[in-house]
Length: 358
Image (cartoon, rainbow, N blue to C red; front, side, top):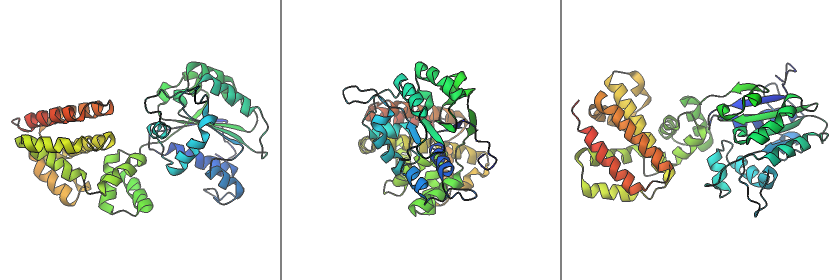
């Protein structure tokens, strides 16, 4: 777009969480501001590039979801911009959950309030500091309240000269149709497994098998893959934990069940969710193996051997029931269910379904 001199005044980078639309937005901004542009990327070393890389360029404005708290003086994005810079630089694949955890606002309602929209209009009315673009990045615009969204309609349609809006969105269906009609959308997709594997190995110098397992479980999210890699590389591998769970469930050993539950109730919600996600992947691969699918080739070593052996317990009659129970457990873990009760129920239900006749 820049080479063809056809950069629109309002762009929206749509993509699922972890797809890279947020770091891509800042990379595009850096390219726009770069004083020594290369054919496909910014130079990364000129004063403008360095300022964008630290999110301190005077002509770059950033809006993100916040929680309103008058006692703490939090009323708009500028009140938390320092914290956002730190979080993004540390983790460019930042999720809304990561962001709210970092500012101790897990249980608060994320919002982009009306006052924020007034501030956007005010900022963009000023002349640019360095004589070029003025760029407004709005991360998670779907969190704008109705009033804020309506206030931005006019400036989105007719912004001041050399002003660019960049909306970085995960759920465009939650936006007003009038907002969507004023932006040019660029779609981002879930990353493919090979790209995630290569990215993990390049950034973390990890073993190929660990990178592949994390990538397979991440569902195309580089953010999730990084979190998963920490556990895959650790002592408590997903395969070993899942194998133990299934051995306990298959014959229901009450003493071992209580021991497993005690251990896994302490690992935290994220790891509990990852365990359940791993189980869903294994069930799928077992069924695919039973139907002769070549998908099993994506596994190797102990994991492939386990799936070959375990697949005889997964059939068309119990497959959907197992998926339903693990998905239900995932849902309730996200909502702070008591893990001891939840996992005991899951073990009992899994025992019932694994012992169903084919």
